[in-house]
Length: 160
Image (cartoon, rainbow, N blue to C red; front, side, top):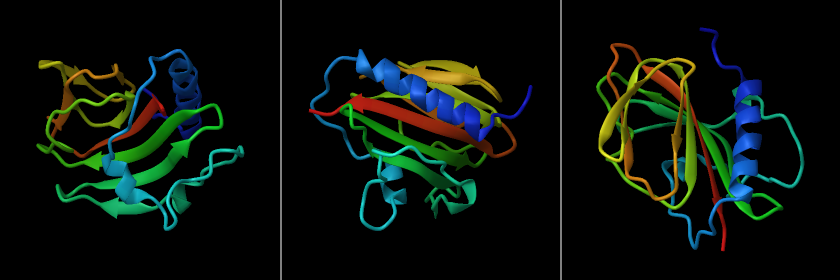
């Protein structure tokens, strides 16, 4: 299977923004781990089209030995909150315990093998697979492979 390109990620982000337009209204957004990746000054500007240069995206080490690379974090002019980041998850690790939140997420697996906990039910996912997590569904993930897992998270929600 071919590796996912940055163009594929941006297309997925646009698709998620369209999905969010018909999603249920959500009152608040909890802080996501990617908020720690933000540049000084807070949110990325979302009112102008642009290319996010991979080498310019800030990278932050995670406590589990992995790292995160911020792409975008902010509210679109149409009112949806959007956040995207890349994560490297070491073998045997979880990014955080299972949780739920009002925003909707897509996880685009680039490399590695992960076990996705979908409301407590484990499902395997690998390169090229896309995990969809609906609003308020309990979910989690663990790298069950012997190599690092690389994936992009695209999160979209309605701001109140």
